[in-house]
Length: 173
Image 1 (cartoon, rainbow, N blue to C red):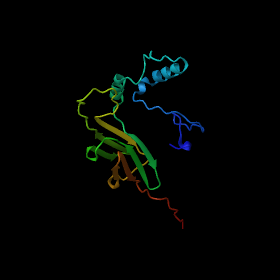
Image 2: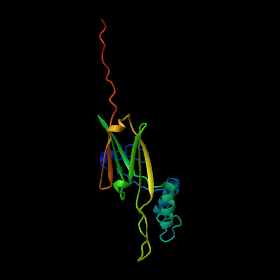
Image 3: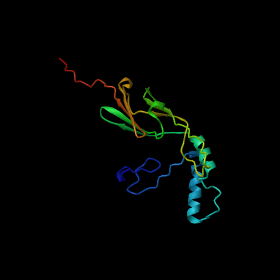
Image 4: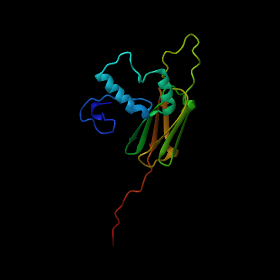
């Protein structure tokens, strides 16, 4: 993200300041995480960390709460709308994309990894399973003329806008 495009968590411009962005799956626990992080910065506890958010059990619970959600960019251009979604670890055949009523829905599944036979997981953060994400569009589109491409885990949709009749001046005789 470029310096001019940086935004605060509330979506406001960051007024030229560099900000630290945290992406955690469980929004319900975010206030506690922030409190714990601030407390840790004033009073380092070292080994005594009752709310340490990177415990394996927390990732599992948080993942169930949030589900798998691809990150999405929606760009409103002159003639069309570009939707770009990051969907790593998904095969093209496992994706289903639909456009209706001013929204785009992206559904898919990621493959389950086989059980590790030569050891136990120390950390397991890669999400697997089914996901669905519906995103609102900034205008009406022609779904039947949509184009999609998928490369290196990035889905790109180009959705032509509905051509509305332009205002014409009518001469009065």
